[in-house]
Image 1 (cartoon, rainbow, N blue to C red):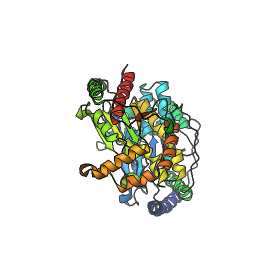
Image 2 (spheres, helix red, strand yellow):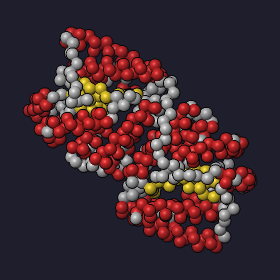
Image 3 (cartoon, rainbow, N blue to C red):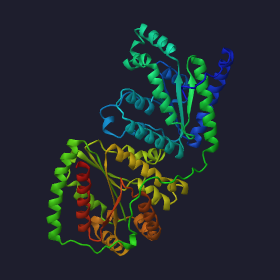
Image 4 (cartoon, helix red, strand yellow):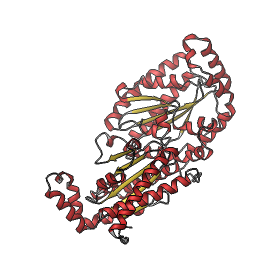
Length: 489
């Protein structure tokens, strides 16, 4: 791309001024249309040091309503960022529907800098590229317009600009050590940037190379390309996204009807095993923190299956400073207006900590599917997207434990009735629980498809037979201990 790039013909200055004026007015109108259509836009500007990313963003936003756009600058990751998955800070920043995010640098800058510093092996680089391609495709598939620009200047022009900035005491601070290193090693940087652009060029998120030698000409290229992308996105916003084949190796999971639910533990045996396994888990938690290994535990299951009591027996064994339980309910408006996985990304634990999800991203293929809260294309596509999400967490180094808590219909009815007839438990039973029970067969079909399509080798499902809650609690403790030990060994 960069190596064989040819400069486009630059119009006369008068024509540039006239076209910029028209494009600014059009972008102002398109911002209102984006707001009306709830279409989120991410404009990513990458490029050489001193290529003018910041000043160009300033020109792009000149006529826009500041209530509906945001500008983010991503420098080197902070110590806190380094304790989260690589894509965490970028996913955290994505805009709500109907808003525009302008990014001064992003994931390309981080990856290529680490590559140039020889901090990424070939294998690690390939993994990052796979993550970026999945991330960008998911944004596009979930309704985001992602416009990626690379601002190109040659070595001579870059050196001239850097020297000009260094000569002025008010702009000297804008030149970093890496900018000067980049200019001295221009050919090496060109090689790495060219490879990255080729590796991350996709039809859903192409790269646009901008001749940034002349500032007004660069502004015009950006404006007109951005407007063309917005116009296409507004026309195609309702088109369904093709479903992808699942490339992940899947583990077999039994049909719900074939799961034996007659396992049980006596009270004395339960207390004995509970003490033993909680002590063991407590010791392992200290090792997890010391080795900075994150743990993510997901609970899904039937209403009244005993998820809350099961979670409580786990957390009793953990240092309260090192875990958090996330009860997941209906998304808030600000969560609903973003990619559906966003609210789970922002709840991920730091390295060495434990996050427990009481319900999770799998609501997409259960309650949202059955209640018609998303389209058929949305929930069918979600199996692959959730597998990609969990693969990202696994590659980060997380222990992922997923539980389906299984009971039969008669046990659920008995527990519902007990809750309804016990004043201190009545808050646990709602009209929605009874409505969901009426759709048991629909949910069973959805659950079986979910288990079948998302039980991967790196994040398999574990069934907790919970007609006897004591048995399910001990089994959960044993599985969590087993998975942590496997990671620490």
